[in-house]
Length: 559
Image (cartoon, rainbow, N blue to C red; front, side):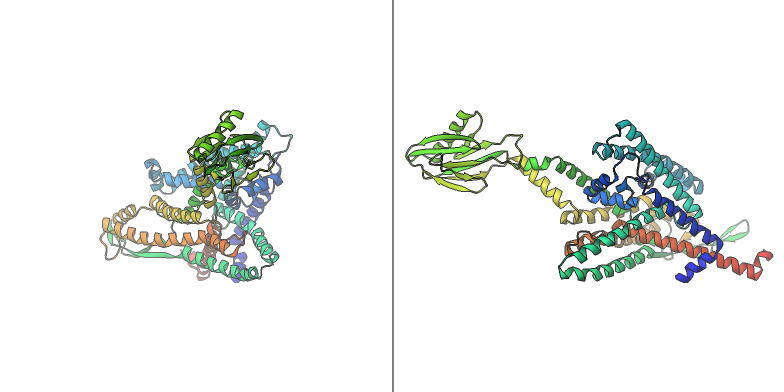
């Protein structure tokens, strides 16, 4: 491989492309460090880190530019979104389908539509992001709302359009696919920080088992990378033969070729869809948590005091928060009668402060009461010696009556418990999150393939041009055969994507390394773009060798 790189630099055309690519990378990385005027980069970095999974997902695609809110903070995310939306709309809008079938001219029109869509999405995302940054107080105090919004929107939108233009120039004059190369460089730029963080966590932890994880993680990283390369290059070749045709006295066809069906046809798209979809409830729950919505729903709104037994004659003192009431008990009063007496005494002190349900006294909690400031209840035979019942399940026996502080939960408390459980289990690494991730990746693998690849259109085109699969009749049987092969390949590809996406979470749960970062979207992109770049370099080398052979053999002069 090293010899191939040196040989590539000896070829002027390839050397020029490689140097142009390096120049574009330098410009891209410099722009990622230039912040938008008027922001506080340190506060923004802390805010993005608090977003958790969503913040990590967006930061990886921008090469850390979002954490600094630089001029390239949006990266090429608007372009990616526009491309995905257009690819999905092609299957449902006949006009776009016709443009796609028109060849190079149609693709040029679709690319033009994609650029305009990118401008619109970039403007919307820039406006939303800028408003969020200003609303969170992450700007300098001297910044006015309109001034900051105008500068930030123009800067972020222009930065995205410049990156899109830079990616197109890179595709034409550099090595690799321009937009994909920029995404890969952005991801690789954060890799040293990830590895340094893992190293710091492993070496700083006194647990000797952590030292064993370091070589194991390195081995896993190598194995996963090799597996991604194998699957990305893997394809099922379907033999295609073309019948001979006579056109104006000339014979056409009569040759054979093959149709390569990729194992991972959707690439990284199913994982992106799954992560983006799961990030929506995570963001909602994070907003609810920041505003203490779920905490307030879980908090006690009513205190239940369960009463049992028969009373002895004497005084009973009950104190709720700062209010002390005295009840005179007769001999052998039932628990229901004691409950009514306590409720009446409390209501005389403050109307509506208590009610009874059989032998239970229900004491409502003020709606504006903080969850960390619960009501206190204490009872006793004298006002000086009271027994506190501060927690659920605590009990006291006074004058022969047993009092137990119980939980009186309503539907709002139950719903709050459910939301709290859902918020926790929808976090990265938890069981529900991994199950939903696997199901969504599996679904989107088939869904995306059904949108972008139609076996029936392919079979029809083969029939028109005289092509057929040996042993399979043209038309519908060919379409059914290709679809069956594709379905089996999609199953393997979906399992592969699920393993790649869930592996980092499984290793994190097993090792306890909270900073472990591997696989998923980023590694698939890096390996996929890297393999494609190497292929392009090899193609330039092969082309150069053929040109040299033609020149040495004098074939050029003969032609």
